[in-house]
Amino acid sequence: MSCDNTRPCPCTYDCPRHGKCCACVAHHRAHNDEVPGCFFSKEGEATYDRGIAALARDHGLKIEE
Ligand code: SF4
Image (cartoon, rainbow, N blue to C red; front, side, top):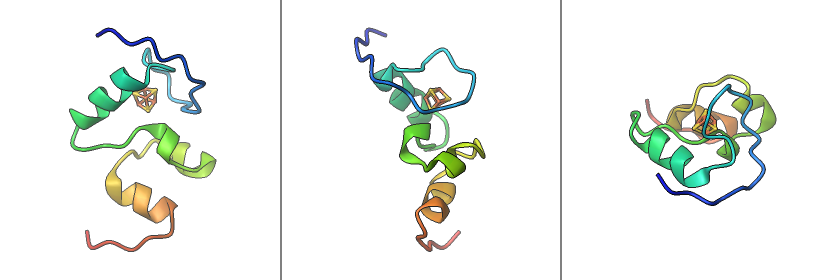
């Protein structure tokens, strides 16, 4: 995949897609609607739970699971 985005990546997971936002989004969309780590707080990111429910909890939102 061509991707020239070189933004700093706050994700701490060992992954070859660091800084490649287009590849990161495509990867997470293909895996059960997970969300890239940069959407989470530092504490939320550290759990490595990239699910939408985890994102909601991280931002203090209540959703039905
Ligand atoms: S959020 Fe996912 S795809 Fe993106 S750098 Fe982190 S582990 Fe890799």
